[in-house]
Length: 269
Image (cartoon, rainbow, N blue to C red; front, side, top):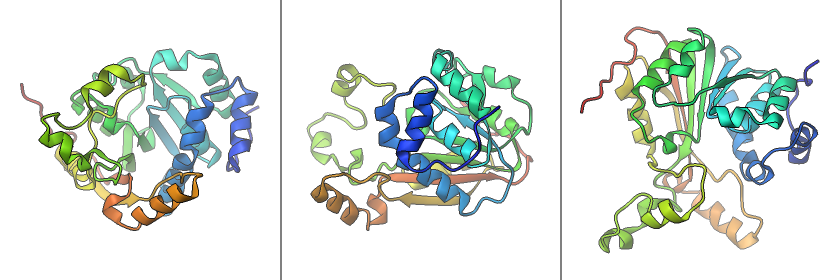
């Protein structure tokens, strides 16, 4: 018998659910819980379509579980080494989340087992900035899996955020380049660096370039998901969030009204 579908509130109750089934990365969940919640809330302000969700890059299933509790049917995609962890398999079983292991998103061959038109929503949350491969094979598979009338939901950091890399002119002038630094590449333990961050216009253009079938129907720059507990830091965040360009989070919804053209972008050497 599966877990009763309901909306997770507050955070402690949500964390307790994962603890009951073997635990999870609690620090990561604490840092990102508000992002998961506000992403779902924003999406639900306008979504009236189906309930089948494909969560690509589902990791510890933190977001997948929240969408499941929100009434969606969820398929989750992640590396085999992640989904082979027993606590993740337990929470997936109790929440009736289908796990699809994918060893290489670049080729996306493992996604071929997912049927055509089997998802109404594709979640691509905080993944776009990590991609280091040509994405055409991946998005070709997503186009095939996404049902007509469905949406791709992309969240990713805003390059022009007040804390982003756009505001590092001294580093540029000193000849130290842009983007992620050599020190960060070598000296930081990470699950994956933010290799490429985007502006709002770039994300919209990204999908327009992939296929004329993809249509941006919502493109927003959202405020800080989780405010600092320090009052002075929280006040600074609130002040900077009043300037839309400087807000840290992009929320973009890409619709697929009809499958007319497919993914038409071509890569060249």
